[in-house]
Image (cartoon, rainbow, N blue to C red; front, side, top):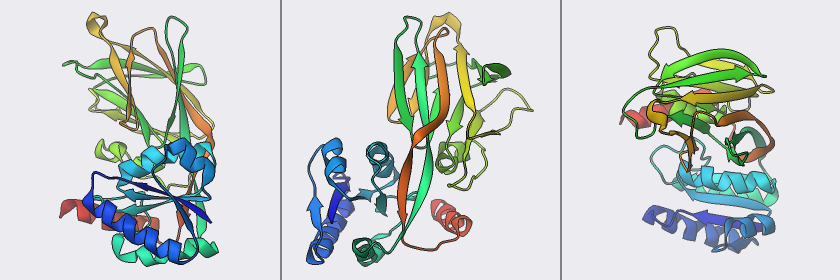
Length: 271
């Protein structure tokens, strides 16, 4: 079995854990692939293991989804909501070699931006797509439509379009609900809305949502994809958000209660 090992080399703990994982799996017959660009890694591998935090998982997830390869995360970060294995349990990764695991399919979002000049940019979101005021010191108006029918205007610092996986990320901090990760839906959460009745809304996974912004002085707002890619958005730009045909296949070694596990992680955040 060929296993791609993606390591956050900015973390000493990740480098140490990766060396342990590599030794463990090669001793049990696996071939470890490292130090290649992501596309090459995911083309060649049967399974991918990330060692780092949620950021490492999210960055790698787009490539895993592109090539439909299962992935598992080892957490050496602070929280690791999406990670399955803690450093003390690295020995359990041997189960991957005998396929002693389950696959959890996570929904992703296709996000496109059509600019006034006709140019179209396409992105894949694991957690969320955020429209915000960027560096502006004022609120923005965001007009949202569902299946080409206007549904609401938000006067706010911004809004988040999240996957169920992303419901425990930025959306949770903005007051959004927790959604079971295998559900099929799109979550919209306003960021600091200037209204007492603006709340999160859950849309069916087959919904096609569009958004436009209005900002003063014709300065751009900001579209951020998973906090990695930032795109300037002007009033005539059209943002479309919908469920992607691709999905993220996460390896699950443990039969955990999702909500109990979430509570444990949130308690860690407080400490």
